[in-house]
Length: 293
Figure (tube, rainbow, N blue to C red):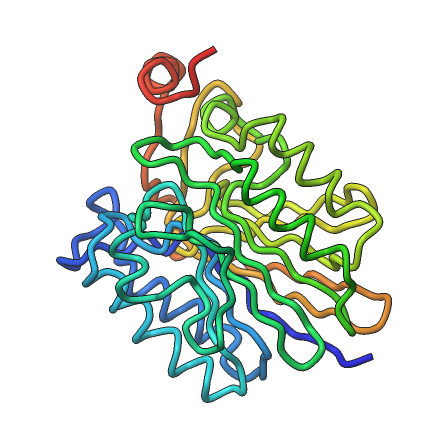
């Protein structure tokens, strides 16, 4: 079986005007440092699993594409992008197509600019599936039945080496109250995991939580990449929300029956907090932006 090595990045949060994220983070510099951290390695795929943009502008997508794609090609890889809750489908498609612009993308029938950004590429015995959990105007995630049916139909026939699924909102519970309010719909997450159970899916790559998590569910590793733009605090008060100035990613290697996930996180300044929301602020954000009960 052919091995597959993936650089898994997520949550680059670029703005078209080059503005700093939360007024603090130089997102271009964070991405440069994340790529440089593993620049001595070769890869087959470089994945950015959503929230590619912060402002949803075409210019922001061009900036990320122009940073990631040449870097990937120089190391034998192609770039793959997924939609996140901050991304805008029209601008995403205008620059990045359906998320796998360096390959012949296959899409389910009837897709238009307002529909979820979904793609399938079969290459060298591997199958790469990009799904779209974004809900326009919302922070939480949803997988509509058409996408789930599309995935189920695809997986009915195994690929030679296996399938990688990329989706921004993880089908896993979050560490904090705020991120749980902005998580993937619980029913959708269960259905996704039920669909991949017993199939050739080797790993599910996701983001959104800005911290490294890997959990084995139904025999399939579900892995969350740490954020490129900042690193969420995993073990602070779960009623609060905060992030530090740093970057991260993961190197995922699939070789035979082994799936190895090695995350990396680097703090830029030990005491530099990007943001901190106390419990009252978190409760208000949940009321304003969380999924209605």
